[in-house]
Length: 57
Image (cartoon, one colour):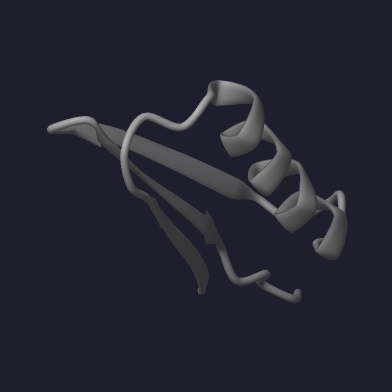
């Protein structure tokens, strides 16, 4: 599993967070299974993008 994490200090706009997530998606294969976790605490935001490993049959 690959994990991309980014911590945004202070109050960052959702557009900037969305831009970061879209940039990560551009580096991935469209067939990859991806989970995006978003947390907001004390005015800061944390984004974690998990890309699951593929199982080859």
